[in-house]
Image 1 (cartoon, one colour):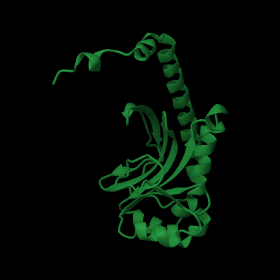
Image 2 (cartoon, helix red, strand yellow):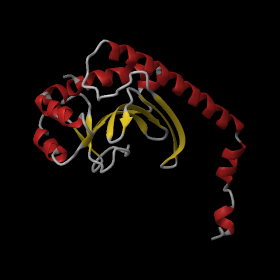
Image 3 (tube, helix red, strand yellow):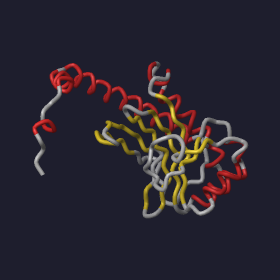
Image 4 (tube, helix red, strand yellow):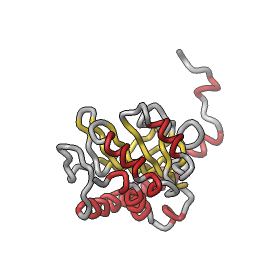
Length: 209
């Protein structure tokens, strides 16, 4: 189906953006800076893993990591690091650090498969160590939803144990997330690696034997 004249014509504001070469050069600089921050975060997390005994899935390789850059997560660019990273069959055990342009930073612990049962047990046995830590449980029917708020996430607070138990009762997977606004000092001061490592530390009660 062909577009109408008005649908395919660029608006004055769109033409200004297309003509602004500095806009695209700035975008490339930002991409490189975020990549450097994620690389620094990976290095720090690798050190943390070396000092900690976790509930790791069989076949886990501490050297594996994944950096991804894309343009169209709900029409916005995104960059993320998966580290530690384990995707093998139905087993998923991953800490994802996502910079979603136009939205927020997200740090997420994703667990599915063999480790999920013990991690869920830890979640409730050590609930009050995890509650009140600015963490939220994903309510979405998929692991790959990154929005926040009603219908998407539920804050993990001391008074919500029964409510969170009801959400997790029928699931073989879960995702716990922390959101950081893009206008927070975390990015302005280059502290993304620090915030990511701090978030991983907050999740340790879930991951320790």
